[in-house]
Image 1 (cartoon, one colour):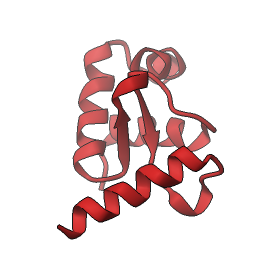
Image 2: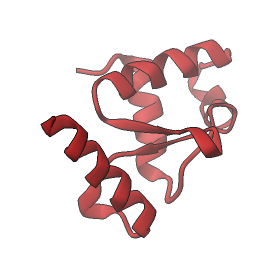
Image 3: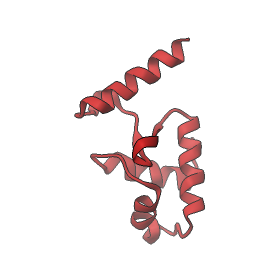
Length: 88
């Protein structure tokens, strides 16, 4: 079960149609009480560890892993790659 900050970040990524950076997420979530980039990064780290979010290094952004709802081919490839790595 995600903590409060993790759930807020997860909800924001769920509503997004594209990957988002930590500072973009912070801008959206300030009204919810998140004030520090560190709060966002900690939540993102935990979500990545749980396999719910993927960090896209080249974009310095994060994307929700939901292959059934992904419209963009690159997003589906990320999920497929993650599944292949998990099988090894």
